[in-house]
Length: 354
Image (cartoon, rainbow, N blue to C red; front, side):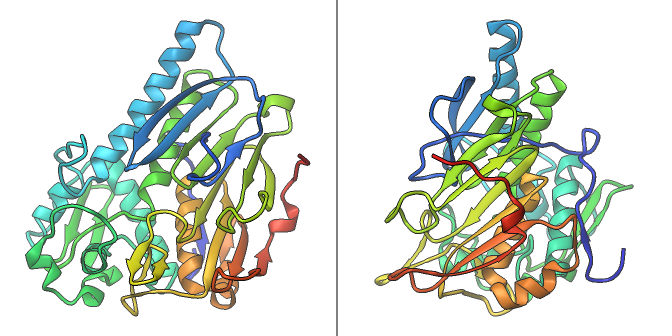
C-alpha cells in the first residue's frame, strides 16, 4: 500500500462483520420506505436507537433466532468498546476499558475483534493526518462529548498530544496493543459502524439473504430488498425542515451521517457536532452534515466523521487515495439557510422516487 492510501480491507469472519438497519427518520440516519416486508427487532445500543430487519427465513423461529443472534453480536461490540460500566453495559476483559487501565504498561493482550477495529482506526488516523483517530479520550472528556465518570488523571494531560496516532501500536500476530501512558482509547466515530458490521455478518452466516441494520446514524443494507434493487433509504441532513433530500437504494453498502442533529455539544446557544479535530483540539463549524456511503459500516462512519472534520476541499484531496471509492456529500453552512452542497461520487448512487 502506498503511503497515504486507504484501502477497504476484506471482511473478517472471515475477519469481521457487515450489516444494515431501520428506524424513525427524525433520530437515526435513514428510514426504510414504508411497506417493505420483513421481520424486525428494535433495541438500544451505544445509547442510540437500533433496528435490525430481515426478509424472513423459512420459519418464524429461525428468523427470531437470527435477529437475536445479530443483536447479541452488536451488543458484544458495545461491551468490547465500552469505556466504563454504565447504562446496563458491562465492559469485559480484553476490551477498551482494560487497555486504558493498563496504559503505559507495555504490550497487553486484547480481544482479537478489538485489534481489528483499533488497526482500522489507526489507518484512518494516518489517512486523515490525525484529524480523526482512536485516541480522542482526553479531548472527548474535555468537551463533554460522552457522559460518564471523568478520568481526572487523563483529563489533566495535553489532549492533543495524547491523541497522536503514534501513541498506540497494535500487533495482530501477538494479539496485543501498546498504549502509551497519558493517552486513552475512545472509539467514538468507529464503534457503531463496527457493531453494525458484526450484526450483518452474523445474519449472512445464518442464511439471511436480505436485510438492514442501523445503530444511530449508521446503516448497512444487504441483499435485494423488497423489490430486488436494494433497500430504499431516505435521510434529511437539513434538520427536518424539508422532506428527505436524499433517497438512495442501498445494496451491500452502508450509509452514515455526521452532523450536530443528535448528541450535539452544547456551548451556550451553539449546537456543535460531537466530533473534535484531533490536531486543533476543537470542534468544527460551518458544516451542516456529511453523508458517506461505503461497502462497510465501519468505513462509512469513519469517513463521514473524518470528512466532517476535514471539510470538502481537504477531504476531496484525501479521497483520491481511497479504494474502492466511496460516495460522499457535504452540506456546508451555518444551518440557518440553505446549505452549500459539495459531492464526490454521489451521483453514481441509484435513487428511488417517493
